[in-house]
Length: 195
Image 1 (tube, rainbow, N blue to C red):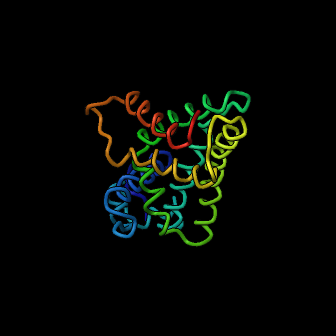
Image 2: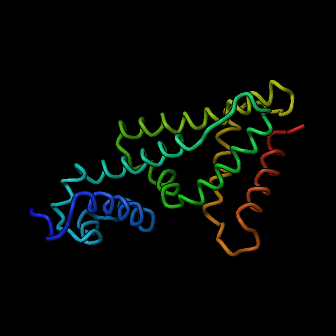
Image 3: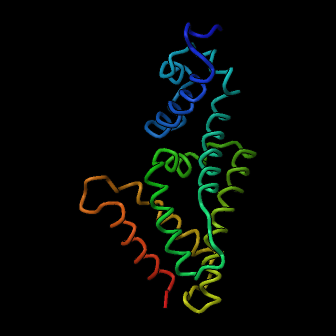
């Protein structure tokens, strides 16, 4: 099928990703059709296949892009004290999560809809991020400033807790973002048994 008059690849491709992210987060991956995505973007359904092989590939691309951006934006200073590194991680994760709510939602709720090979690729990226936090926790335990029976389990639990902020936090509420980051940091310090 031909492109709708006036559609251009440099506009349609990003518009498709934006529409998919928004609609998948709002309605769920299974409930959104390629025809619905085409309507959002303003092209005929067949034109979408110039930008993605299928809906599964589109979901995988969105999840991969989110995780790659998360990993690219996180930076750690392994020479810094472990508690300082943990504080930076908490602030970063809360901030990043609130700035990317739809992508975070998809990363957790729609992972189950990935084909096995796509699921494995995203799981590797998630593991790399969990490893970054676990390295901080391992350093804290080695320095005697954190006390955890299992740093791998703690890393996964802390990430789940921090990510949960996207479910309930709204701008204009009792706390601004720095206030929420401070509360979450206190919770995390308690959870890791910080000395």
